Image 1 (tube, rainbow, N blue to C red):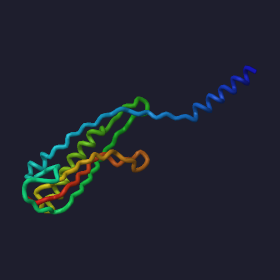
Image 2: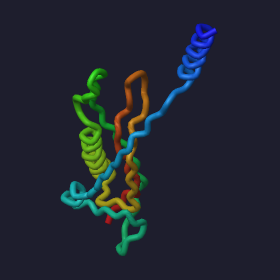
Image 3: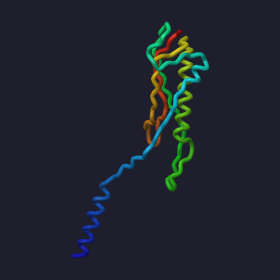
Image 4: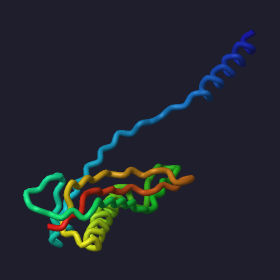
Length: 145
């Protein structure tokens, strides 16, 4: 009787523990200051507002999205990470997107951009253990003052 009870208890315990899964939520914080010094140093007017107090010629809408890549390895035994950390990859994307915006504005003959919106793009799965890296998206209207 004790043997049967023990076996039944073991089977039930195994059944109930193997059918559950747990999700761990890690707390995190991300702070990023996106400044426009690169553009301002090159005489590009930048405003997050859609109205400015001077006359301008609108050239067109601009959308730039840049994602940066890198490699990060996690040791499965001790949990240590090596390679680039996510903030380094994000910083690279921030620098690249502002330089691409400058290149596009210059190619359009624009010397300003208004109604600027910046979005942070999180990493997204692109395959087994492969992600499109984090990045930024910038939109706005290219203008000529």
